[in-house]
Image (tube, rainbow over the protein chains, first blue to last red):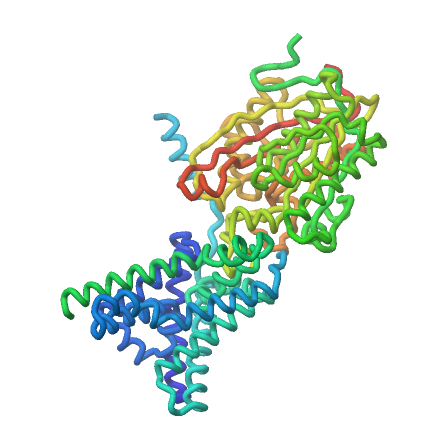
Amino acid sequence: MFDPLMYVKVFAIGGLVCLIGQLLIITTKMTSARILVTFLLFGVVLEALKLFEPIREFAGAGISVPIIGFGASLAHGAISAGETMGLLGVLTGGLTATAGGIAVAIFAGYIFGLIFNSKTK
Amino acid sequence: MYITERNKKYNAYVEAKMPKTKPWPSLFRAFWVGGLICCLGELIKDLCLYFFPYMTIADAYAWALIILILLASFLTGVGIFDKIGAYAGAGTIVPITGFSNSIASPALEFKREGLVFGLMSKMFVIAGPVIVTGVVSSIVVGLIYLIFNL
Amino acid sequence: MLNRVGKQTLIFRNKPRVIGSFSIVGPKEGKGNFGKYFHKILQDDLFGEKSYESAESKMLIMAITEAINDAQVNRDEIDALFAGDLMNQIISSSFAARTLEVPYFGLFGACSTMAESLIMGACHVDGGFARYAACATGSHFSSAEKQFRYPLELGTQRPPTSQWTVTGMGCTILGNSQKGISVDYATIGKVVDWNVTDANNMGAAMAPAAMSTLKAHFDDTGKTPDDYDLILTGDLGKLGSEILIDLMEYQGYKLGSNYNDCGQMIYNNTQKTFMGGSGCGCGASILNSYVYSRMKKGELKNVLFVATGALMSTLSSQQGNSIPSIAHAVALSVGGENV
């Protein structure tokens, strides 16, 4: 807990992931929706290859805060629930594992959408 | 024939004429802001574990994401997030904050078109593809594991 | 007798004249390079309305009403209103026309609408079909952003070739008068598409259309760029106007210091608009303020106003189509040149 070396690693890996995202934006003119989808898929692939967990042990929030972590949780949920519950687990596992994040994003979006208005630039 | 040739030449000419911005400043900005957001996530996780020693690490990370999502949504509402985003680019898009912002910003924008067809349905114009991709790909991966008994 | 010269150019022998004009802009435009020329600068671009679309319509109503006042005519005497905007189904203009209750033609020429409406108005006045014609258009940054791009609060970076939609409206009242600024020629543009697909690079998409119309204008009338004190394109922006200069040079016409572009003029360098302004309101607000005022003072005698428009939609862009563009040219003069 509160290990300074860990924060250095989180900063470096998290920053590096975002830097790769920025590089993609500059070179391919990708829009933000495409960036999100690409990194999410990357997370799913990392989890499928069982590479995500070792990286998370090393970099902590540096890999789980980027949307890569979201993709990895989805895949991890589907795989592990599939092992215990079979086909039903494959179908329900992904969203169950990420339900918190999705629910909060929708809830907060709804509430703040009601309260605030978009401002002109 | 002449027309395709001309268009090709014109597009090449436009490409050469386009203002060349140096990539390094924007890469650096994405790096430090993105890194900082991840550190904030790590800090929230550590604080959770500090105050609730019996919490599992996975739950602590889940709380970190939830708080970052709430924070990004709030900053979107008060009109600050887009300024940070304009500065940092992928530095705020790639972390979970970008996902949160992509749900909150259309909710604010399309409020005038009503709650049902405006706010609620337009909420997913940007985040919808993310959820669809995530669900579809995770089911595919789960099925592969199930079938091949990995 | 046919009132045409060459292939694309109309001559207005009865000289319809600008008898009134008005421009209204948002706060950002007010802080730009032409703040002191605009007739009205809004402090809040919601203009007391609930949505930016309603604000856009209200601004257009104000521009038209005040231009009619400036012309010192009655609203009943406006026999035709030509207006258009960027919103789907040109709602801002049609809603404004609903309030104004004058005979109305809705136009869509994207950002070329100011020139298009001037041409239509001039035709009506010149042909004796209207005593007075109102020609108006405008755009609003926030409503355009919502329709064409992303929510305002989405945290993305604007690409370096992008332009900033101008929040601004302009209206010109044309009528028969003895003196003042006259509309002498109009060159109607063809739709030109050189296969630019990047919707964030409108200047490059529209520059060939501007070149085509300018060349047609010079060929038809026998004039040269030097015959004009000011050749003003609508919203090509910095990149687009540099491209136009190159394209014209390739065609054998040199655009010198008498050439400028509303898009690259309207904002100053500190306003972070990259290539400058765009939108119907860009050309409309500058033409109806700065250009007319300098012409009235006699500082400019002959002006060629070339408004350019990109005729794509978000659907056509998503389907991967290129961006067809158009430009219309209107030649204005003071003093009255005999045709």
